[in-house]
Image (cartoon, rainbow, N blue to C red):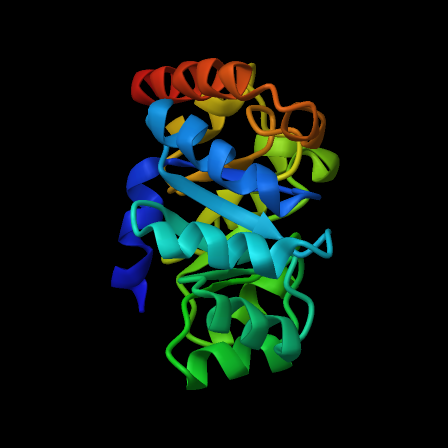
Length: 209
């Protein structure tokens, strides 16, 4: 299952998207692809999430996952729609176990050593550090991850153009999740040229890290 995350990791930055209108899905995909980041985590923070995942997955030129997954029903909805990975804000044992039993790549959220050890108990090697900045940022991540050499992290929450390189330079960070280039306001206002520009800038920053 670790291998299935390689495509996610190679992008280094995963756009975390909350989109209200499925009609904006295709223009968003085109903006991200033009910006050099054909990847998106569509969060279940909106009612349109399932339809957006399906719309993007059908294109065949994007890596599409589901985020803010809180229960098994949302996992099923996401996978049926074509999502190829699952991201959760916390570590829900039922969600993790269901995903593992069905060979679905899953990255649950962790914020403490206890969370990390629970993830290790499931055999996971990559977890989401969330909410990264609110929990002390990279300084805290370095401290809580130090005893767990085998675990890798995808920090999410408060990541932006100013701190992304610092996170990506840390050896235990394999990628970051961020929404600064795909904010809900940019999408709803159909500012897709701006999204493309910000995405190109984000990709350039990741290459410097």
